[in-house]
Image (cartoon, rainbow, N blue to C red; front, side, top):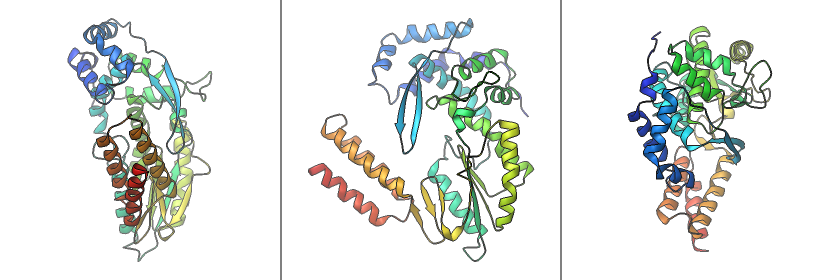
Length: 349
């Protein structure tokens, strides 16, 4: 295992902080808090660096709100100064840990994502089933309240295996400890805020421990994970059933996590495998009903924003193409036509 030392100065360098600002602001330039920070940009960046350099930096509080996409998510938003630092930390730490992740860890990584995940699952199911000539089953699991139950001490100990830099670890502890969820106790602080860029990296670092257990200890190849959802494919249903206890024990004993009791399922390939918004079947791929409904609802909302002047026509058409792109990964020709027809109907009504 490669050890990294003396990376703190790289994180807090002016070059890295200004680069972090550029990445952060790219799609947020109309936000008032971003404009206020930019008004005195150099002064604010230099002050941030001084606070970091002289160990005076303290992470600020969060503003919280709820999003429904499709299920309700509690988002915690840090102030601009802290979010710039998150980008600066991410740019240095991500390359260090990226090389340790397995190829089928698909969340928040370059050239990965949901569409890549569903393509890999489709290919895996066809390989295991011999193009539907052999039995094929998929074990699908979900970790209960994952972001809310990540244990701070365990996370920092995992990071510390590779990062042997006291100043960097002190900074990471400040970021991690800036948030605690309702699942924290007097014995352990828990939770990563959905909304921090660093939370995406920390989630992958945390669950990479589980990925390595699946690959190295259980010797499982047909395994795919996207954040806290994962699938294992096999010919033998009993084999998958026998894996569940080993998986549950590792998550509980090593990572203080719990499988969602209502979201552990084993299904035959021909019944359809529901994953990442799609349902994969032997001869075709469908969109989950909730996914279809959400896209039509989102498009109606975007058209309303266009008519109210909140977005321009180019942005609206980009949204339509994005939704059609989702449909293109399933057998959804008629659905795509329905969406386009609905688009023009809503636009002209």
